[in-house]
Length: 110
Image 1 (tube, rainbow, N blue to C red):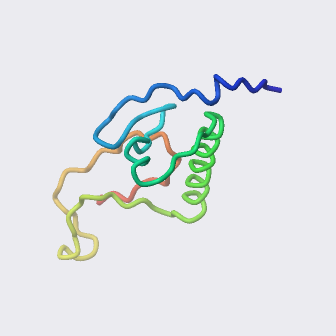
Image 2: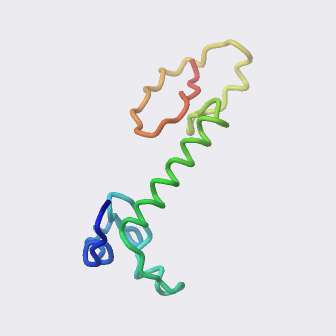
């Protein structure tokens, strides 16, 4: 059993600014709370609850990919419909990037 210590849970760690309106805190990107506070009232949330929400979101996305995504399309490739079926495109093969998420293998044009 873990002991709840108010100062450890409700004092948020310092955020690192990534760009205008985006910060990293607890190893995750988030909208700058000062920017959000202009439009919406902010509520105090313990650090463990933030981490729980982020982890649950990642679990949900991984489950959706495992059950519904048979393939991953590679964005930024030019259309090859004019080449007809089974003809090589003549472009060099793209390289696979290493990703930490458990996504299906991408469809590559070769």
